[in-house]
Amino acid sequence: MAYSIEYFHARVQTAVEAWPVDVVADYARIVELLIEHGPNLRLPHSRAFGGGLFELRPRGKSGIGRAILLLSCWATRGCAACIH
Image 1 (cartoon, helix red, strand yellow):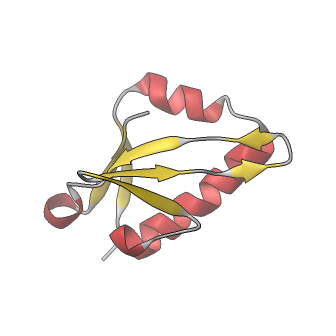
Image 2 (image 1 turned 135 degrees about the vertical axis):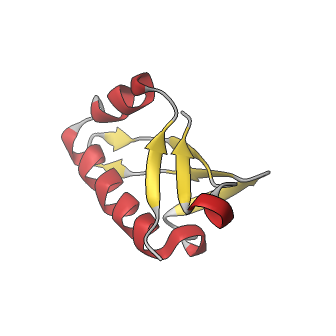
């Protein structure tokens, strides 16, 4: 099954795209893994907070980015909502 990522609001996507280039590149790599593996993606790529919330922590030489995903819709729609 092919999964997808939806952004809760355009500001969330804009904030992610404003990260340093190396962090955005790692984020893109992790998102590709998430699209391929869905909710089975675990550490070191994603960490569960509980209640359907997961954190992605892309890294680069310039720092770390954090993206919070709501994965509670995987079973019904096959997508994740990036909420922060």
